[in-house]
Length: 211
Image (tube, rainbow, N blue to C red):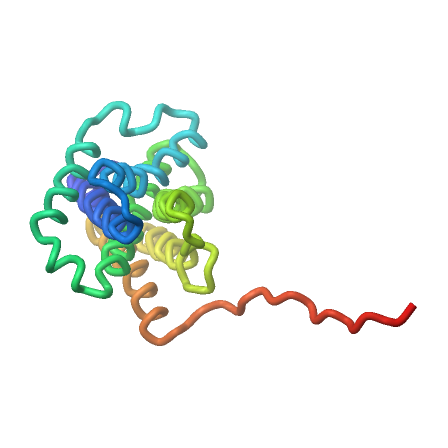
């Protein structure tokens, strides 16, 4: 059910992801409009892919607030540029917050579509992470999703907590907050203590034999 809290999480996630996209664009010699586009793509990319997979019209086609929130994020970045840019972890913090909030929004919308719990978790992960992937690709960066950092797995963990709370018949608001915080805390802990999955490494090449 799309509750008032979910609506707030949606707006907060949009703002957080837009800030992260704008913040990353700032180091790429991109103008204000380009920065706005990067913020918008980061904010709506994951949800757009989710809606296309659900065979529904992308959510932003029916609501202009995502464009407005992104504009507010750009304005806030321009007005408080010194504060935003001098914080070395600004991009990471806003990206992490957006990841947690949008994961829950994706799960909630997938539940409304009548999907099974594991599909809802996948859709939540897509909603939370794919916007950042599109942003990174457009900015010629290796997406965070494909690095060794704990990223998508944090979304999966949040989804599991979400359905565990539902199974325990906890209040919807508590369930959403617990799941979002799970994603955020796991991501913060993983980066703080350098917890990550093993990297794929190429097989050692055998020395060439003489012909």
